[in-house]
Length: 206
Image (cartoon, rainbow, N blue to C red; front, side, top):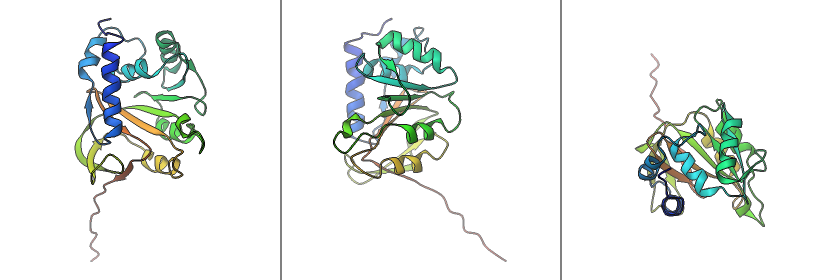
């Protein structure tokens, strides 16, 4: 493996922190992901694997949503020594692109939101998506954003509404991270408001 477990994963962590503190910032993990070529047997994208290697350790738990979840969980356990757990108990939930339709919404609903005394014990959901790029499909507002930030995320389903319901009683809630096929990363902490921009067509009645 060409990846430097210390240096390169520190780089991934810094990029993740930067994206989390500045929601709407699209971060490129391509340089680090290229170092994993030919070394990935988890079924995860290189970007998601990088995040797993960065965040998982023997002190935390995780759950994978995938058509081949057992294989992915076994490989991640061998790589990080983190233990698997049920979705409502896991510290990290990983949604692979081959997961069943509605898996992201299911993960959001089942994820541990923490408590008022210990909101930091809530889950982080990391999901693979089609593409993340500049655009105006979603409008982001909240801490770390001066006014608002537009962004495009290719992810079907009603995850925005489900996320809003999960995070309505701040400080409890869940944080969401997207990674795409081009190794782009977008972080949506629970404090970020996400609005879907819809085009409304006028309907003329004769």
